[in-house]
Amino acid sequence: MCVCGGTCCIVGGGPAGMMLGYLLARAGIEVLVLEKHADFLRDFRGDTVHPSTLETMHELGVLEGFLKRPHQEVTHVRASIGGEPILLGNMSYLRTRCRFMALMPQWDFLDFLSEQGHRYPTFHVRMRTEVTGLIEENGRIMGIRGNTPSGSIEVRASLVVGADGRNSVVRDCSGLTIEDLGAPTDAFWMRLSKHPDDPQLFVVADGGKLLAMLDRGDYWQCGFPILKGSAKEVQRKSIEAFRAGIVGVAPFLQDRITELRDWNDLKLLTVKVNRLRQWYRPGLLCIGDAAHAMSPVGGIGINLAIQDAVAAANILAGPLREGTVSIGDLAKIQRRRAFPTRITQRLQEVLRKQVGRDVGKSRTARPPWPLRLLERTTLPCRIRTRFVGVGIRPEHVKTPDVYT
Ligand SMILES: Cc1cc2nc3c(=O)[nH]c(=O)nc-3n(C[C@H](O)[C@H](O)[C@H](O)COP(=O)(O)OP(=O)(O)OC[C@H]3O[C@@H](n4cnc5c(N)ncnc54)[C@H](O)[C@@H]3O)c2cc1C
Image (cartoon, rainbow, N blue to C red):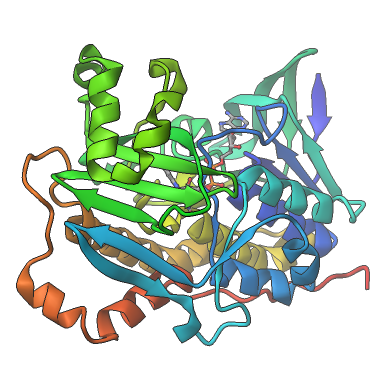
C-alpha cells in the first residue's frame, strides 16, 4: 500500500514526534506521525515534565488543560546520599510560569499532545505502524517503508523526521554516523507501593547502591542502576539477594519488598548515551533521542526532546509550507540544538559522578567534604535547578496557530 504522507512524515510518537506533529499541524502543515505501538502505555517511559516544557504548554495556550490531568507537582527535589540529606533542586528559584515539575505518566502526556494535535485537520497519526526502511532516490530520502497489521506500507513525504528514540531505525537506515559516548550503567525498573508516611525522596544512595524514585501517586516507579552488562550476573543470584540490595539502600521499603515476586516484576533498561555527528541528510532530519540518546540522569531527556521539536518547528514551518526545505534549513536545526545537547550530556555525566559515582562498588557513597560544605550555600542547588528545570538555550514557540 502506498500512502502520501503529505508534507512531513514523522517516525515515532514519543515526546519529540508528537510535539513536532502538533506544532506543524497547528501551523497548517500536513503531518503524518507513525507509531509502532498500539498505544502509549509503557511503564519504562519517564514521567518528569519540567518547567521548560510547562512553559511551552503555556505558550501554546494549553497549560491550564494540561494541569487538569492527574499529576503531582514537585517543587523540592530531595535526595539522601550516604545518609546526608541533599536538596538536589528547588524549583521555586526559577523565574518560569510554573515553579514546579509535574510528575505525570508519560502515556497521559502523549495522549494530551495527541488530543491537541487532533484539533487540527492536518494532523494524522497511524498507530501500529512500524517503520523498517527508508525510500531513497538520487541521494535524497523520499519516504519510508513499514509494516502495519494489514500489510506493508510506503509513505512518501517532502521531509521524513526520525523521532523514533534511542534505538532509531530511521537513523540506522540513514547511514548517518553516530558517536557512542558510553554509559557505565543499565537499570532495573520496578514498581513498589507508596505509603503516606514514606519520605519524599527522588534519590536514595548508600552502601554503593542507588535508587531513583518517581512518585506516581499510589506507587513508586523505581530505577535501580547496575553496572553495564552485569544484569545476567545479578539475576544469577536470587531475587531475595536483589530485594536485600533495595532494602539496604532504602530501609523504609522493607514492608513491601516482596511485591517483587520474581524477575518478571522487573524490567531491564539498557542505557545508551550517544549523538549523531550530523543530524540530517537531504529529505531527512533526526531529533530527540534518535539524534542524541540521553541518560536518565536528571530526568531531562523528555524535555530536551520537546525543545528539539519546538526548534525544528520554528525553523521548518515556513519552508515546509512553501515546499522548499533546504539542507541549510536542516543544518540550522542542528546548529541550534547541538550545543545544548553536548552541554546537557556533559553535565548529566558530572551529576552522575556526583550522585551515583559508587554504583556497584561496596563503599558508602558519601559526598566529599568540600562538596558537603558547598551544599550549605544555595549555589549548587540553584545551578542544578536551572540546568534540570529549564535547560540550556530554552526554546520558545514561534509558529502560529493558523486556525485562530
Ligand atoms: C531508564 C531510563 C529512564 C528515563 N527516565 C526519564 C525521566 O524520568 N524523565 C525524562 O525526561 N527522561 C527520562 N529518560 C530519557 C527519555 O526517556 C528520553 O530522552 C525521551 O523519551 C526521548 O524522547 P523521544 O521522543 O526522542 O524518544 P522516545 O520517547 O523513545 O519515543 C520514540 C517513539 O518512537 C516509537 N518507535 C520506535 N521505533 C519505531 C519504528 N521503527 N517505527 C515507528 N515507531 C517507532 C517508539 O515506540 C516511541 O513511542 C530516561 C531514559 C532511560 C533509559
